[in-house]
Image (cartoon, rainbow, N blue to C red):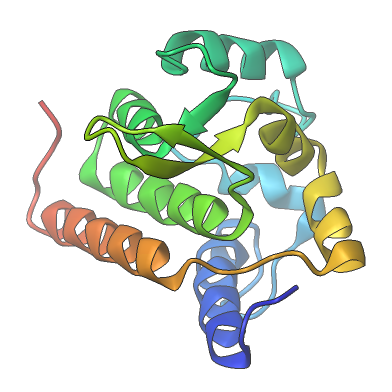
Length: 173
């Protein structure tokens, strides 16, 4: 999908390391039929209890967090969403890692950030494809994925900071 072998191995290890044990598998095996067991505090809630994508819930997320109503979630808006959804540092770490990776690989637009400079964003259409499962299939067909390693590295450091805070008992205000 346009990601180097080193990043691919790292990303796969992180994803399977988190999902595997939560679904009844192990660090190298994710059990797909029980994937809903991997839902965690901090999730957006766009999947119902049966694991089905809810477009209505995505609309609610967009209405609440797309502050400038441009049809996309910027990095800043994603951070606001993460803070609102995560009730613990562990939840913040997981969502920062998930959305950092998603934004780093699949941003499909840019928006004007607080400092006036362009920043990567995920359009509602791109988020819909992610949640309905078609994003990865499209990426495999087109090969148009490029990892923004700098952005992912910054989000990885932020996630690690939240994980450390979780280990010492910090909770958001």
